[in-house]
Amino acid sequence: MKYDNVISFSNGNAILMLSQDRAGSARGPNVDYEIADEALTLNKERYDQETSPKNRGNEELWGRSARRPIEWHHGFHYVSSMPHCIEQKWLTDFGKYYEDELGILIFSIWNRIVKMQLELIPAWYAKNLELFKNILLEIARLRHQMLPATSKDGVLFTMANAFDNIENVGMSYIVREYEKQTLLTFLVEIMNMVVEKVEDCYYQLDEQKHVYFSATNDSYIRDLAENTDWNFDKLAAVDSRQDSDCDPTSPLEVSSDWGSKICLLSVGQERQFDFVTKQTMPTDNFINEFFVKPDTSSDVMIHELVDQFTELLLQSH
Image (cartoon, rainbow, N blue to C red; front, side, top):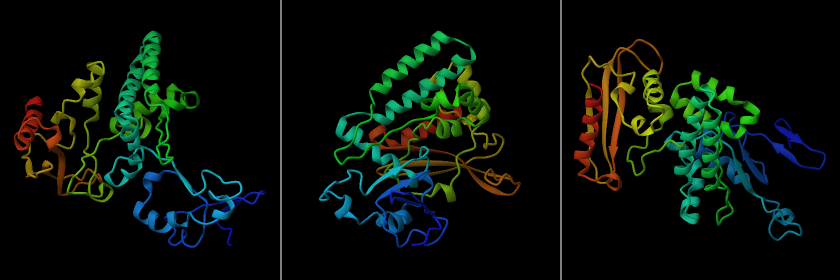
């Protein structure tokens, strides 16, 4: 009955605010609904053990058999930036019903929308209103293909990004963040692009503890994007010049792992600089990785993996 973390209302309702930073704060109470902000930061295993089980009780008041049932009773509402780590993938798993039940490739359509929204930026720079308008019309057409729909179990999954809030934040905000942030950060944090991950992988590492995103040569990628007029076929071609943490004058350490479901190859290099802490120190630096799965391979997986690695080296010379 403590009110340390409670906002109460005159009609009897109350909001209980919990934090995983405070040990034991989620134990004991009963709640009727869950709302989680920045859900990708949750420790999902701990959340399922401590917090989610508290969403219980009061069935006689608001449950299905109640005199005036509330449809959302014991429901949940998760809001989040786009997941980018393996342990956060549970958030986008909620949207799989679009493809499984409705036949809508929602994530593929969404990434096409994001790529077209990126084309709005050079159009804005050039003050080409006609091009800007035509791109917006095509985006609206694609948006119509992924209109919000609920699953058979009553789940509603939706996606949005800064362009959906353009009247509030303004185009100048999007351009400012595009110029200020690295391209990867901009695509994930501002544009909410879906970052594809490798499924059926044996090595399920916690990226927040063991892995960092490869230090990208953002200047090279931006120049390539602008010089090719955002030709995504050319941008999709992987090139070792995209890795700013690679020293072309030092030997590479290549390690492979051949499997039946996936073949992996990682590229490392001994450096005297830690790209995580930004400190000068001896570091075993992993700068790139490659994989091939049977459902995407037209050749022997090992051969195709070696071809990927060789092609990356050839393109940079």
